[in-house]
Length: 295
Image (cartoon, rainbow, N blue to C red; front, side, top):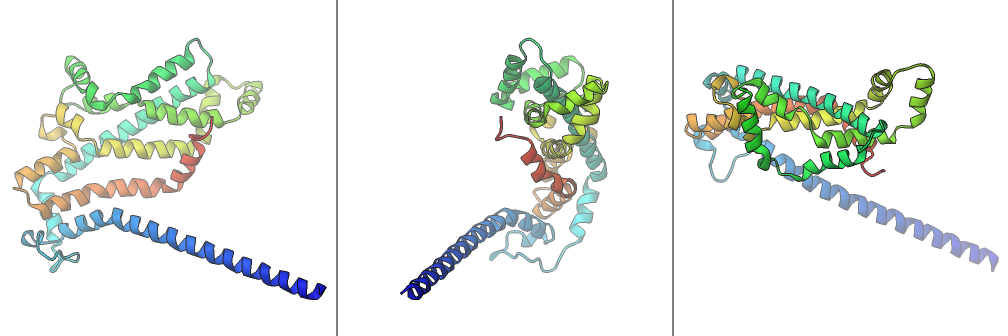
């Protein structure tokens, strides 16, 4: 009787284990299928953009659609590059985006360290007030911002493109959440060794915040690279235009030649992809270390 009961128990255990493994396999398959469908849905527009950029003008709206161009028109990229001083616009956009990113990282890190580590009267209320600016739509402050830039004489200049975006409440909040997760004992030990507040910030806090800074840098760079409305308002001359503006006016000047438009869009996408590929190993780590789900 004991042997039979033991055999039945082993059989039930094996059946339960097989059932659990089967459920896990089904759940994994469903998860991967959903992720695959989502990936295809997100990649399809980019694939279509590249495909259109390699087509003849008359084949863009052919039905049924052709995902693989025949013949492939590599000359579309050369024609697009010659149609406008693309190298100048690319340099403009890179300079503005990199400058905004560096300034945003600098101001956000300094403000976040002050709000998380320094103690002064009204600190928390001031931080909440600063954070409350995230609730204000950007379109609401465009006119006051434009009037300020105009009074300063910065219209159609790099100052107008860079300085208004040199600080962000989101960046400060992001960095502050990370600084709050860092142990105070690190600063106490450094202070005992004679380190100043600036030395602690520069030599301890910033190096430990590297992944979070990289993630914030990617966000800031992408936002500025794709910025359209503000440059459209403050830029008048062709020399100061960025790629986002060039793509819009490119369309009008060429009579909506969609194959060349898609070639221009593909060219403008390359630097963004390079930035993301360079920083992707820090991306997930930066989101994890930012402490958004913490205190």
